[in-house]
Length: 197
Figure 1: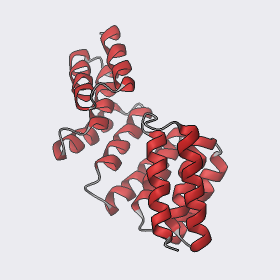
Figure 2: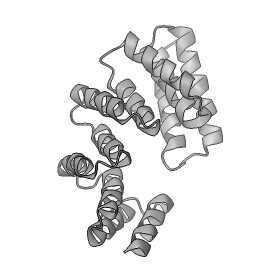
Figure 3: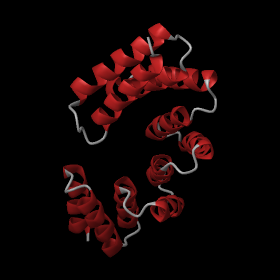
């Protein structure tokens, strides 16, 4: 009868399915959806559950209309929920709506200023928008807070590669590889940077 616990399960499965497929997406995301739907059965006004469903719709179903609807509903119900703004910002970046993405991610960061994930994803959004200087600035902030944050090294390496700074790109991606215990996705990025250099 505790809706928040189901949201916790939903978000755990969401991240296990999305983060380099630690868990097979076909297994993780249906469990995330079921847990979020159970949370909404218990409490139909639970913003966090709508954000969880938005993540499933965005990352697994590729139903972007549903994803946007869920994220907006979460923000409407709980405007100060950082995760809703964070995931909505990621979604907007993927959709190529970079100004909206930056605004949503900045809102998430204002609500949760120490979040390395949000700070890094703001840097990633700038990277995808080809705004490499702004991306580098955000990523350096994240790495100042925690020099061992793997995703910040990964995106920072990609930024340096695009800027033609091959030695820095390779160094950052090597660090990400070491920190992640040789994650295959990161190794492929390192291999690409080495080939380009």
